[in-house]
Image (cartoon, rainbow over all chains, first blue to last red; front, side, top):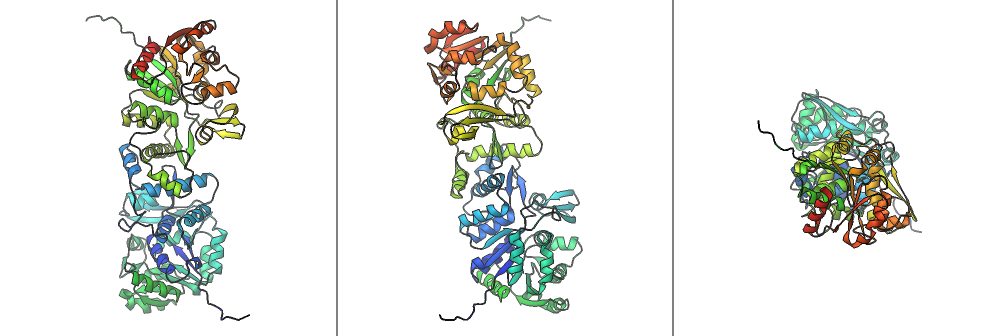
Length: 314
Length: 314
């Protein structure tokens, strides 16, 4: 029997929020065998609305990886229609959280399966199989957690803050309700232990990644394996690529820069990938004992996304 | 001040199932001021599916009275579309209970309001106001009850029996789970006490009317006021006008005729309205101490429905 040189397998696990993570995972799928990629996904944004259990980050990632994402809107499904929402608005129902007709089918499916006793992990696997998504998507926990904002206008749920108020209110604090009592699933812990590289996606550190890190057991693995942890900074040139990460970092007392990101992840990171626009900050970050790689982190152009993916796995 | 002759007000309360009751209520609305009509509606068919609380009888009546009913299908809303159901079927979801896009908006609205703490009665009032329904619709109870069938293939929920198995399995028994612990709403009891006439719609006695009668307090009022109770037989010439009433009456040991209906309602009825096709049975029913009126009870033609409505209120 012929002996072959052992193939070096880069098996990566990506801590993931929504849109930014979806783009990175999509780019990584072009560079690695998708079955070698596991995404551990934030569920702090999940909500129950109209009786339906909605998992925005899981759905954003799955839709994107399935090629079903709506590029025009920047969220939801392509070829979407709005018959139910229009009728709901006519009834005077709550229509601030826009749910397209195609999207609703996902939530109906999930809600029914959950009511039958399936876990969120199982439902995610079923949906991904149906959509032909090869990347393994794992909700960080099957327990209920809910990110909550203490704001200038009172306590707000994630989607009240993010969608209803367009993240345009001052935030004094963020709490992930239920996190300390939640359990990371065995698959999540195993993926974090078994992979050769852990990636922190360029998602919002405070409201996408931190609710993952707060699930008991997760942070400890990253601390122990920090040499294997690579993060991509979601802050470029002092501003968030998308969403309120810059504003939130500032409001909660962090430096609004990739240095602030490095400090937020202190003790968890081996390497931070920053954008060329921030190259001059490399030495400050290296001064924290963190390796720095500089590349284009804005993934709008496919070639850039691919370059970033290569940088993440090299 | 000029004294006027007092106007005799016929204020009627109608125990109601779905389609048959909806037609009668619609016809009654043409004969009486709709605001003088109260429908006490069965909720034993209600179900939670895909996380949504669905009230088929309440919706059938409201849609019909609002002029929104789908005549072609015989259920649901006119101008309906099926985008969500088609997508759900693509996902491999449970699509045996067909929910149109317009119809879904009703269930989303209701489910959200219930989750906010509204009662089924309150949600019904809100929806009816939105649709311009003047007849007062009251779910018999705001508590959870569920009609369950003991069949040759095991226990089935109402909609499993009715929709999934097309009421084509042998039934050994029917139970209304939760009925004995449920509370009729104060509005229901007040309507039954205050009206000048109680009508039992030509709905299925076993699975539409009996789940109303089983809510504590309701049967007792009908027994005491039986002289004021008028029922319309849903059995004509030994067959149900619609649905499985004939088969169920037979399977559960009742006579499959308007006499069987009279016997089923024994002690509760002052008058039974039967179809001309059954005129020869009048004396048998009168022998039970129940008045009989004979007319056309098939409401397909508007003139017939109107004649029946006049017979009910005269």
